[in-house]
Image (cartoon, rainbow, N blue to C red):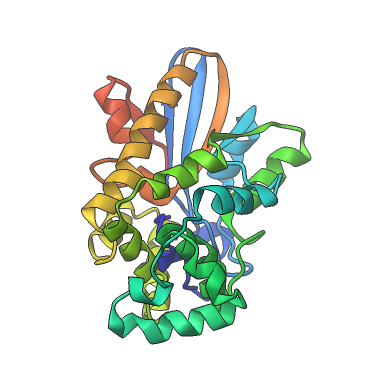
Length: 288
């Protein structure tokens, strides 16, 4: 899934059956280690059936689950990081940090969030975008939580006492946003302010591509997103993918089976995790 909220604030009301679902799945392996790579969608329409026999078999074999970050065991940790890392003094009002044609949508989103304007004005632009994402989801009837792929998969692993780990901590993950220049932070904020009908149509296409395992279409969705600038992609996708590839290469040295689930956008395109692994001489095979 794309990292930016523009994708997260839309929904697809699809009636898919397990037989029709074939999300892409890859495998990195050597003689005594297997690492499954699965691209996720962070927020799903309620009741969407996405699992199939191949994915279930891979999860069943795995001894552990690795996500981008484990955020559900301590719900307050993200808020704490945002409060410490995302606050600053002397910032301009949030409305002054978006283009004039986006200010009405920002005002509506702020009202929907119920958050006081002085609080948002005191946040760095990236942090304001993060905290407003929940309101953006709510605008179109979605809730961040159990309907996303990560919470569902985490519950499956924990139910059989298999560990759930993260490639990043909450502080590390949000630190990437904090490293963005102000211009990119503002593009990130404006991405939360897409017209809901437009965002819904975009997400419909993304969900259909993901369910079909159409990685080319997923990659194209990034190229077609005007707010997802090359600078944003470089810091939020490529830089992280390179770090994750290094971690996976190290993990390959230890025997066992691991299931790795990260946003689908990290497993598509010319700076995907697979590309960085290939540069290390490691072959990733697509198995679905």
